[in-house]
Amino acid sequence: MRFYIDGYNLMYAVGLIGPKNQISLARSRERFINWVTQVHPLPLRDVTIVFDGREVSRSPLPEPTNGPRIVFSYDGTADDLIEDVLEREARPDQVALVSNDRRLRQFAARRGCQAWSCDDYLEWLECPRIPQHLPTEVSEKPTDLADADYWKQLFREVDDHPALKRFNQPFRDFGNFG
Image (cartoon, rainbow, N blue to C red; front, side, top):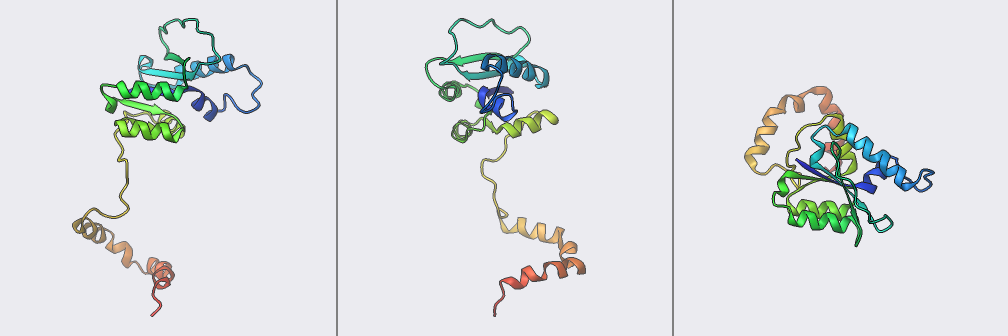
């Protein structure tokens, strides 16, 4: 699995930058990159962190030897650069995007990528596993009548329990007006 991380977005989510941050942006980026290097459990060669780069010097960055790849978007936003990269991705099903930007996550999902919020990524760090594709839309109801019958049968004992019946009675009565 390859990861593309919306750098400033995740930095903000983990509290390394904020509206009144006293540390320089360059120093905050450095601390963030070190943090990702320490906490990301999969090979770091598969991690790319993308930062907005309009305010950053265009001097070439050294290629990382044991850390994530760092990319700056000099001619546009990080979001634009990430969209361009995901558009050209040959195996989008092998990519996870990390960002709280809803538009960017929707774009990634349409391309067939995993689209993780920053909280999703932080939870994954606590219990890493190879991400599986999640359905883009979760059905509220069983997909067919046989599924509904199966679940009703499975939970029949729970529904018939006297204490639960008493607990649920006000909810059952709510819609019955006559």
